[in-house]
Image 1 (cartoon, rainbow, N blue to C red):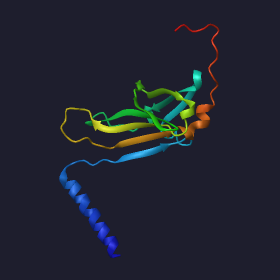
Image 2 (tube, rainbow, N blue to C red; image 1 turned 60 degrees about the horizontal axis):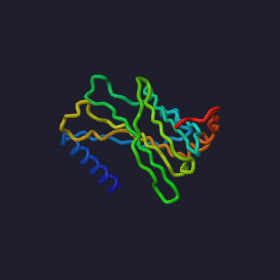
Image 3 (spheres, rainbow, N blue to C red; image 1 turned 90 degrees about the vertical axis):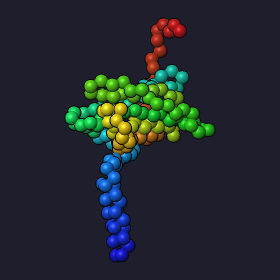
Image 4 (spheres, rainbow, N blue to C red; image 1 turned 90 degrees about the horizontal axis):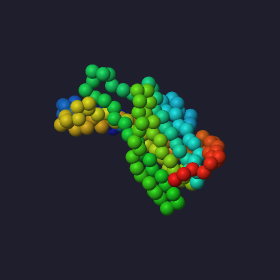
Length: 172
């Protein structure tokens, strides 16, 4: 019982110090996106087979299902994504993904070889930030990270048919 009181006292003291410091503390949440919860998290994922065992993957974020700030808020959500591709010897590629956005969706499109499906993943970041980027405060730091492990989506990603052969050769 004494240890519970001690823990509650320490937690209370930390909370009081945080409130008195005047700095906002934000929570960062990490969500493992799976085929079972992909739609509930406001995403769709699809793949198209390409030549030479390549896959073109498309992850689409439905902004109607995404967290947002009220228009009058000084804060807004910043989005980006990172692709990590692994092979037998470890990480092969780590790169940012440039999204295509419109008023309703944000789309991340990328290609990689089917052989690297196993340990590869994409992380979509939605960070809390200030609209006025010249503000001197520390970053807010809150937000949500959505991680898509491709091995969880293997059946979906590999189900697409290979591309149809063109009647005439392509000119390069």
